Image (tube, rainbow, N blue to C red; front, side, top):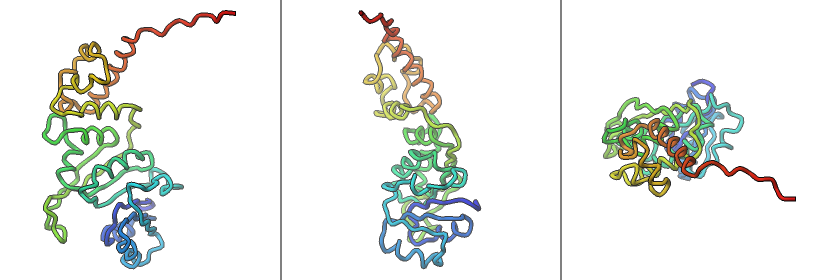
Length: 243
């Protein structure tokens, strides 16, 4: 949108960068390849609204990059290399408070996992993690013929809306434990974290994580945490210190 500051992951030869500069007030292009980064100013007409950072995006300080930018005018985008899609998503999630939204082109198989519903073949930990941090939507698919050279897989554009509340602290660790061994029930996956008696009392513990939506798993986490506190018993009543 006009007025936005855009962080672009891996601009490459600048095909997307040039289009972004037509709309955004500023584009910060993060490119690791030395030669591509050196050629980018020329390819983009030496625009004063373009800043090039020759660095690994996964090592970037996004807080510093967006310093002075309002969240409602900060977005992140990129044509993601397939082998680092999940790490880039995690990096964006960890700094979600900095951005209004993200738009990524990724392998369609990964896009389907990000937006998948409980019980579907594609649903898993990445689905829950994504839907915990944002409202993801798959916009459209692209065939290999749309690229030169064509990849061996289909691609898709996914948008991530970061407008929701921040996830509760500790819940991501719970999610990771729930999906540790996908074929096992939640009870078996969570035995290292909760007492067996607390898990036995939960109506969802006999299911697999893939059967439950993120909100259902969040509700289960709250129940188990409360159950653990009850098992520990009431806090001891403090006694007056001896004189």
